[in-house]
Length: 190
Image (cartoon, rainbow, N blue to C red):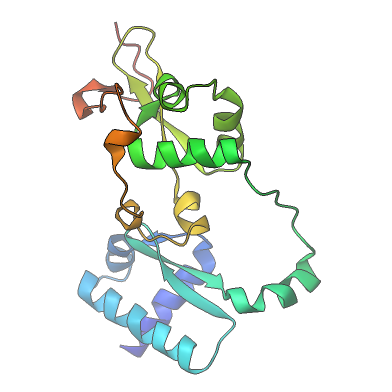
């Protein structure tokens, strides 16, 4: 188990981004249960020894990241990364996308009652939102959804961890997008 555990650690360290549990199992020629057990042991070791990094669960996988309590020390070496807080408009747009994804820009604007081009563009620039395809409707509008960076930034493993809200109050008149309405990437449609 030690070799498996440290192989998982090496992969996560080298990847620098989330790695799906199934990918780890396939690469290490083992099962998902063994990978999960190896990660659990690594997490316990890191917590017990107060290591400077931790393994987080994200999007059906794992990632190594530095612990928040050491942020100030890390910034002395790396320098302060200038990250402006999201505006209220961008946060509102992000919440709509997170809860209603995939959603078109017109769907966002219908809920907000105002043009959302700037907010959507800022969220894309920050890597919190991405294009998810196109709606099979006139004009083939772009569908938007959240990214893995969104999960990481908000400390979520999956979208199911979002707080529950009454979506009916924010979606009056906005129809849910069905899988059959989404055109594959690069499809020209009719």
